[in-house]
Length: 150
Image 1 (spheres, helix red, strand yellow):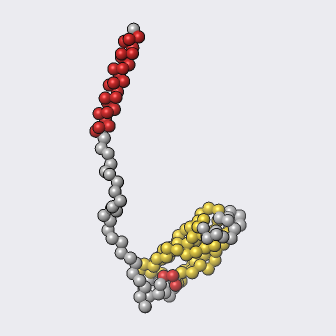
Image 2: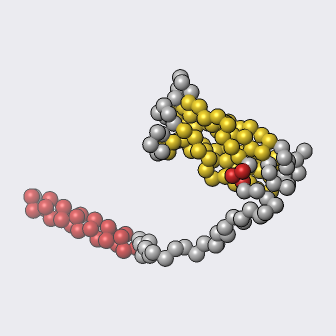
Image 3: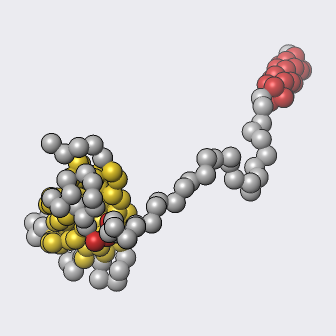
């Protein structure tokens, strides 16, 4: 009786091993990894500002950088003045840096369809508690021509 149980167990184990081998043999492996980059569309660099169009950095300034004393979250107030000759929209990134210059939070805001010479003020709210003495710095500024202001 013991011989039948052991023999039956070996037959089941053998059948299971054959099944696993057959399934693994039918699974396609991913292609070999290479260091060659994917064929992606080339990224064109942003056009340099012309003599008649000022750099976007001249359009955006931080007017306030404060830490909420109750929850410890940092925010910045930014002022955008459209210095270009046409209606423009802005993407504005702000990073919040601790006293050692290490980024502890960041956030973004935007301004849409700002007419030439016009200004807008936006609050950029960081998420999460930051240490006292955290400062604000602009980053990732983009000005894009946009539709007519109305």
